[in-house]
Image (cartoon, rainbow, N blue to C red; front, side):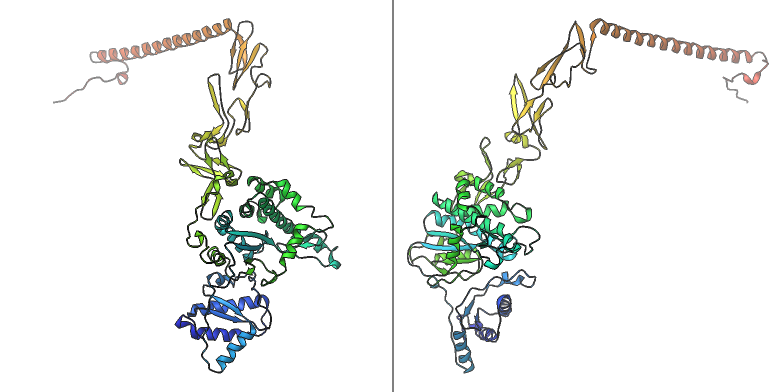
Length: 552
């Protein structure tokens, strides 16, 4: 068996042989065992791998293995692989046993039908974000593919339809605790418990309702001629309403719906009553769509991508899926996006992309990217805005008040201007009360009796402050919040001056007395010294010696 790559022949023969000897491999074991073979073959230099089924049956798409520390290598497998039927595998085995030369060419160019100038494709997904790598890969794909998908949809190149798998509860278990917690509409529509633990977290019925809401978002958006808004809703819901933050709720979903300008009442009407003992027409249509028609088999695993009614079998990756969709166009009718990686779009022009904006300051959190718009608080003139980017962004740090007053309250009256902006946030200045953002109201200090409350005081409120006077010609002392007579104030002032004056006089007299005493002592000492030179004194030792004698 050979490929166009000359070095791959031996390894491809060995891998097919190993797959044929796999025996009864099923489920997760089959996926992990054969993917490990592909990984080992790739490391040894193989260019491709064929995996033969061990049972005579229609081929199905293998499911993603459950989360495991032993499957990290899956993301690094780059060689192509293909599942072949048992009958074809037996023929290859027989030819190899006979020593025949077998040449197999792998060619995916005509893997999808391309009947016209428009491609119809479906994406079967799930709103659950707690199911490990499988859930992570789905939302990562939606985020990365959103930009391309919306361009194709807006220009009429594609017709996209999202779908969601549901199960039903057997009649004998409808009244069980498990069915009640995992199903809606009396067991008709169910989903597995997100954490696989009935005692904690969200239940399967929460997932079913959110899945139903996402279908209704698509239906309502399509009715208004904007089916591509489904991509924005699913992306924003995953970011703003994750299970791990306990935000996987209707309230959070309604916030996303409102930010995108969708009619939440129409969506609620589409959802209906999950507790009613009757069929839900939207979910009933989803169950009917799971059944295969024509060349498309039943949809039984997530995620599943169907392009032109043919199941896509490949990596859930933006580049790979875009190539598959482009393969669905009739030749020469491919849009430019299929011939170039450059996609020019600006989703921020309409409704600001559902992101936060400050129209007064002309500041927006909407950023247009190759993968579609993102809501991210901006940096303006060196000032960083912080927040979720969807409903709130606020300037932070020094300089924040220079940009639209930091989003805080500000007002001017009677030649005075007051602002609630500080480096730490918005806080009403002294004399005002309020949230500091939308409103700061003047505090009536007179009415609230916080100042100017003495018996003789006369209080007058002003904007941002107050004025206090006194009746009867009295004088107001703000430090003590009291009124005193002007004469008393004068007397107090003179008394204070007299105290200072007398204090200075007493200090001067005391200083003069000390000076006279020290002069007298010095003069007495000098006189005694002079007299001691001419006559003996009774106490000679007490006479200070003020001269120096030199003996020759």
